[in-house]
Amino acid sequence: MAADNLTLVEHPLIQHKLTILRNRETPTAQFRQVFREIAFVLGCEATRDLELGEVEIETPLERGTFPYLNGKKLCFVSILRAGNGFLDGLLDLVPSARVGHVGIERDEETLQPRRYYFKTPDKLGDRLVIILDPMLATGGTAIAAASALKEAGAKRMKFLCLVAAPEGASAFSEAHPDVPIIAASCDRKLNDVGYILPGLGDAGDRIYGTKC
Ligand code: URA
Image (cartoon, protein in one colour):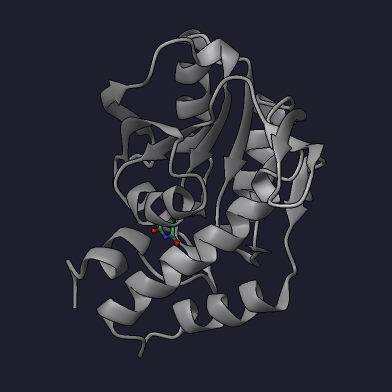
């Protein structure tokens, strides 16, 4: 059930940090810190095809033309609340990026997405929009977020997660074949309440320490 547009980032630092996150013994402070670090490294992969322009500058020794990012800024869109744990690391990487927030929660009974908040920067169509949601489980939330962002004008998007379930990755690719998915791992499967196995548990609870 592999998704055509899923890229797995197998960098050793990412795999090492993911194991720390998977470990149930990892305390909240370390979990939050490592989450931020792994987001930074994943962000490098998600931004690897940013278009470079050129700028003419003077080094202390001579004048020259050098690569430089120009054009409209990136926009990170955090899917609340676990997306915010990712956002910190992404903003370490690109401090000038614009940020949107989408509140879509999973109804724990129906597992269907329910939107309760939507705020994004203007001119989304001119920006590369990177949607942040660490856990791509059923795909319901991710699909709804990408659809809402398209309605708001987004044209070029990527979906950045930490762990994908095969079911979610394939549902998302079917709904949004134009949106590449970048993940550190595609795990085995979903359990019967929509959690990823082996996964790392509830990412929001583990980042914010809301469940012991
Ligand atoms: N959301 C999570 O935080 N973890 C899962 O395993 C699935 C959805």
